[in-house]
Image 1 (spheres, rainbow, N blue to C red):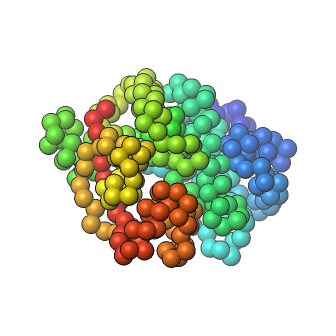
Image 2: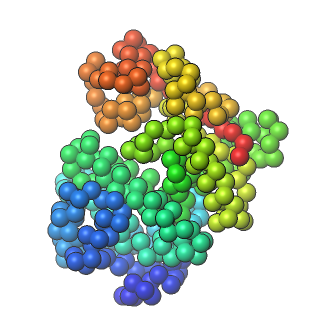
Image 3: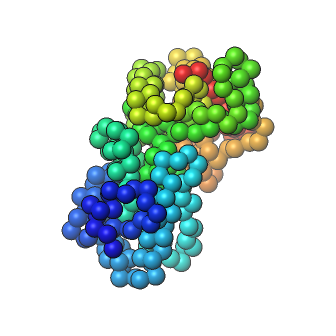
Length: 317
């Protein structure tokens, strides 16, 4: 097996080797990734169980090799395996160890692109935030959507201030809408897909403006070979029905006003707002709290027999 320093030198090589930090080094690595402190001791124990299982380590190596093979390529990331509940804590956290073992390759890719260390650190720290999301919902360690974290560790998504930006391509409807508006772009062309992470403070217009300024500079500098003319967002936060419940100067309404509609969603998706606002998409509607304006908006609309829909918007960068 290659040493860690040798692995870092060839992040896109033909064969990657998993380098798992030992039990002494692992806590520092986890804390660098913002993994909540209460999970560290358990993960150190699980690391030793993983390392003692030859079949599990073989799977880990295969996953890391597949994950880093197309580092930085849009849409060519790793599809994490799904583990049944019977695999317990090790199955819930296996993906985390894949990301930890892939870190040397991720950081080497960031260095090659000249990504500033603080941007790299804050982007990869979203792993810890998602550990907190999992704990809020289930009370245990794990990752709800490891395929999402894979975007961060694959050079496809970056945290820049309040918002996250995913290097992506325009879909048919949104691409056609942007083209019809006179932009020199269309379906399949590059775009930046905006995402709004939780636990990052208010989504104020000032915070979003600052983030967008960072993004324009960041991608022009670190991806000069790619042209990003359009920003898109696909989220329940763009459902225009929210304007019935929220004042015109609310952060959500002002965020919506940045976008032109790409197309109208016709399939209801009530679980997304319930999951994002209350932490669990399976909560009974009649029991949803009414502590904040957004909680009242989401819950009251559902209790009145309404439904929520994903919004699809875009604006020129």
